[in-house]
Length: 467
Figure 1 (cartoon, rainbow, N blue to C red):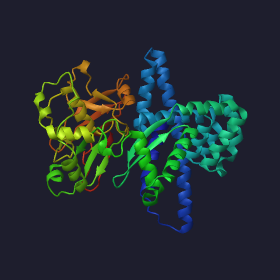
Figure 2 (cartoon, rainbow, N blue to C red; figure 1 turned 180 degrees about the vertical axis):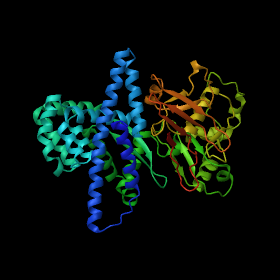
Figure 3 (cartoon, one colour; figure 1 turned 90 degrees about the vertical axis):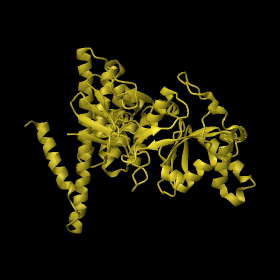
Figure 4 (cartoon, rainbow, N blue to C red; figure 1 turned 45 degrees about the vertical axis):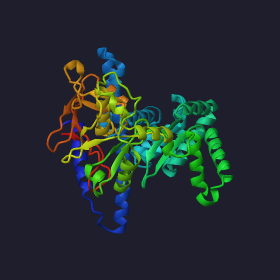
């Protein structure tokens, strides 16, 4: 048995033993055990960093030696590492960059991590602080900071790393600020009780100016006394961003997924709302609110301006809602798209369309069924609609062979040595995909129930590695 195989076997046995610990023992033994587990966790993190960097290095070397596409080989390596780390390729890119800094530029910090004297997070903070430094500058930082790490919090470690970098190279701070400005973005995520969080990541000066303007306007608003500063600022922000007083005045398309029992009866199963281009996924609405929303606020027809080259439907459907259309023109339009759920698997089984736009219907169906990228543990938003079995290899353009992918995962599957196959839905089995990597490891993923499990509101993507 080789050294690596022996290490894997030992780790498996150790993991099984550690996983069975029930906390028995004296108070002193329990504290000692917790400390030992912490040190082991740090040592494992250091080993993960070394092995991951070596794996990526070997893949790139292989590409150069054999004349393969370097970009594809690098993407394939990141994809394999992401599956092994059980994270998205985007997250793996960030991890790998930090691992490289630790292994190549910050060996002292890596040794402290391996000894268990600092946490993985603290080591990552040092690596982030060294991001703008050259190799020699990072080596000087490592020599200065590594002996102190055991007594520092992660925040202190990152702060000292950044201060050291600024002192050695004041231009580094300017470079970081310029680079950070390019990452500005807006995001939205659902919260509990029908709420959501809209976040704007931007330059500090711009964020302070926006907040100050909202607060100033709220302090002179007549509704401040009744609503409070937070609600008033939120309302003013909505009005200034949309130019409207309420959401009912906006033209939006809403996809509401609910069971027939929830829509027409007294079933308590929540509904799931998703809207294209809003950034919101898995927003759950209580059944009573969903019934009121679907039956009271939304007309059951589709936008007249949503044309498609493949549309062969009877256009007379557009005139069926005369009075309602006129009201919509005044108040803003909302559209409902009805989706049906397989009663056994809970996954999306079909969609009801008044008109046929084949390509667009497929994309909407796949997005609603898969909910996020189908690569195990990615969880990224769907950006591409992919043939599991490539079209060039005879793969059909249908919803069984189609699956949603993030941009990075869609590129990764085309790398040398990767193979993806669809797992068709059948009685009691949800639609899924099977991925085989160049190392021969096999991973599967199945579409989650669109309405979640009965016991929990939202079910995660079901993913697994096949031994």
